[in-house]
Amino acid sequence: MQEQDIIEIRWHGRGGQGAITAAKIVARAAFESGYPGVVMIPTFGTERRGAPVITSLKIARHKIYDLSVIEEPDIVVVLDHLLLGEVDVGAGLRDGGLLVINTPFMPEAYTRDGIHVATADVNSIASQAGLPYGVVNTGIIGALARATAIFDTDMLSRVIREEFEGRRPHENVKAALLTFDNTRLGGGVWDPGNVDR
Amino acid sequence: MSIIESGNVAAALGVKLCRANVIAAYPITPQTPLTEKLSELVESGEMNAEYIPVESEHSALGVCIAASSTGARAFTATSANGLLYMHEQLHWAAGARLPIVMCVANRGVGAPWTVWNDQQDSLSQRDTGWIQLYAADHQEIINTVIKAYYVAEQTSIPVMVCYDGYILSHTHMPFEVPDQEKVDAFLPPFRPNYALDPSMPANLNTVTLPEPRNNIRGELAHGYMELRYLLHEGMIRAIEVVGEAEQRFNEIFSVSGTAYMDMYKCDDATYIAVAMGSLSLHLRVVADILRDEGIKLGIIGIKLYRPFPCGIVADALKDRDGIIVMEKAISYGYVGPLYSDICSCLYTQGLDGPSPGFPYVHNYILGLGGRTIRTIDLMDAIRPICTGKRIKDQPGWIGLKI
Image (tube, rainbow over all chains, first blue to last red; front, side):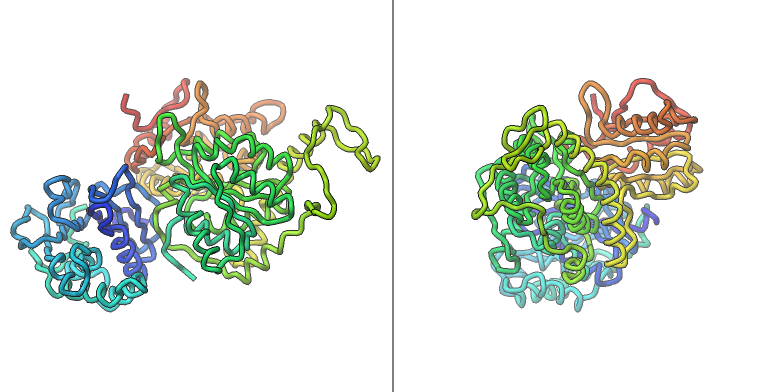
């Protein structure tokens, strides 16, 4: 068992935005893509709708025993770029790590030494896919899928369809796939091997 | 079937598989999603049970006591101050020898309010006569709920299944959902020795005199003290029943669980860290890292806390150089409750006094009210003990900022 083998993804969203659902979907997609060790640990404070929230997703080829909150993530996913003005979303992000942001701006706007950045304008893309404005949690997973190689789009589509059964599954899948196609990568596809641990 | 869900859902699915007949609960964080899930399962018809919403935890257990007295398989769940509000009914359920199962999503106790995890709530209910089992991950939660009904019904003693609030209750991880057929084979329908019946009215648990005396049918009936002795004796016998349940479960489900303790790298260990719940698994990471430094650390996760499997625990610990007991609870003014139990069981093991080579036993309090438990902090706390540090004043505190 090696602690270093764990891919740690910290999610920043707002209460009600569905960050936990998004992380749960990625957990399942990773699990079914050959990562038997997945844990999704929501952080609960005294939050209410709209307030910043965090959830920790850890992915590994082995069972994970440390269920503490992620402090040094490999990947940070941000569901609303305005959070950058309120929360230090990059806190502890490892050298060689990846920042995925829902934002209308290009990756260059967020460039930091040693950090890969991927951006997508999920608000607009998800609307095009037929989701109400502001529903971004499936779109952002498409951006994460594009920026990493943890799971492919077939797996993503299937897991989203099942999770959203009876709740616009078609539009949610479409939002993820459209975002996948329209994600702007600041560098190449992120490789866990590049992270300085 | 393998699914990824929360610990609360794992518990709820276990209750469903056990075909509980009556569920009564009052919402309290972080338990609430468990009983919400059960209410959905009852509402949708997937579960054939009476779901009785009540106005308090005291009433929730009161309903379970009444239901269990009629021979129903009853379930409730709670946390923290909700459990404490049940306190009087906890004694009642055990004294009445009712095989109720309750989940406790462990949470710190107010005042001041906290919704986050520690184990002060259930540990402070240690002496109510309930069997207490602690689960360390979701697989253990669902499996332990199923075993709990078997143990409760074999011993006529209620069982608390405890798991860490938030850390397990709200974390999602993969686990296997046991097959219904196999659960049915493991857990036959509940056939009580005695059940209330409207056609045969009776008084239960009425005033019982200090001395035995004849009952209404002219038979010599136990006095209060005899009933207390029998509850204690039943608890002692429950140690065997818990072992038997584990064996039976392992055979039917083709798994290899352990009943009393989870042991990790203990064979050659000179030091052992002991904990209950999710912390016992987290400590495995510490053992791996410290072993790379040449420290022979093993980990024991205690699963059965009451009745305390004293002989088994003492055998596993007595020949080590040192023991480190890590606890999310404290008996104010003394030490952690598990530390007392472990020292006591090591001391009495030889019956005539301390067993030879009585190891140094260290106590750490940590993680109260959801204080983050970091691997690095655990390593920094455990390493000095394993390299010879000894202190007289117990306990030590990890991460205290005072």
